[in-house]
Image (cartoon, rainbow, N blue to C red; front, side):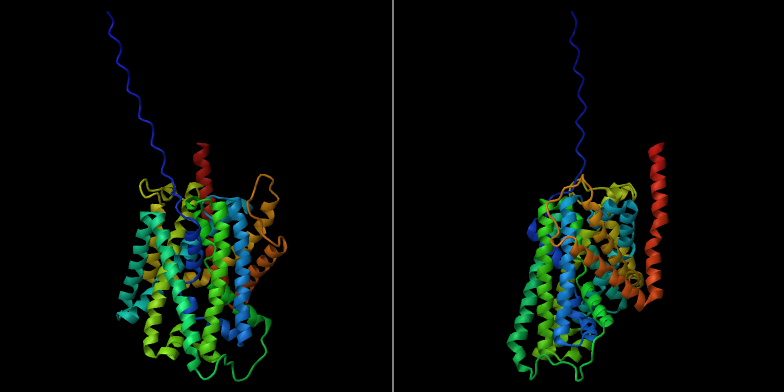
Length: 454
């Protein structure tokens, strides 16, 4: 009698690869747009716009124009986000329109200077204002800046839900603080004997000065594109991201106009133009010295919230680059439990902390920040190229096409030309730092191709 064979145990089914978690809805995405744009600049130094265009109508006009250009850029990005729902944002759009080399240059500049540099810079602003509450020396200031980078990176490491909710709450608090400032200016500003006081002698403004003021305004709107980095973690990204971009940009434009109007309502224009802490001077004029301390706390709150969104966004680009083989695969890992690009988050935190500790972020960021607008101009041109591809579909189309995208590209390149004329030596150094990524890209793709062939 034959004994029946014992069935061979089946191999366990392989566990599915970890993936990103879709947790960002419209309120969170909109909060990211608003929170990453509104950092410290509107509370600290709108002086460059006022210096360049010394009239109330001119100042408000330049801020409105900067908001309009930013809105066009947001609408361009919205169409691209409705076409490509993959994580990576601008990196993906540039790579699809022009090839992976340009996407790589964007990510290269982001990691080594543009994105990591702004993280370091905002963290230092936070630490300096913390020094108004608790006196800090240079070493302690750097330690506080690094600590806040590591804290927010850890929160984002734990999950996109935690990071996006933190961003949403801080953005809501920031908007409430803006309403309080505007309301305080309107209610208590009547104590000031004169309002909207311009310079003693009006002088004609040249187109170059208007452009200089516009560039300062556009930099204050920086960060509007970062919500596109999180497409794979956004619920219905083809619908959510375009709406968040439009709503968020309009809200920020209204905030900036209201803040500048109330500054000029209370303070003489000469004071606004020369001040490096205009919100504190505004509060001092209405409440005395205690007002400056309150504004310092507000700037800390605002920078913390802005930093939360910027730290959340960046690692998603490095994740996309690693998945495409343009970075080492190790950086593209997704945490099996937290469902976050945990290694990319750690890399970003470590490099931004190095920039804070060494102080090199000032040089790197100043040299390279203008190059962001080269990429934005190319992104607008890329939209024209992508519209000709028959294999692509989109859920949103830019209004005013092709006129508005063309105007945005012209404005973007005007920012670059203005920077070249203002400081050609530093400009070409910054461009050189970005172009250093080309040989790295060549070596990386050559190595990847060799492995594939083997």
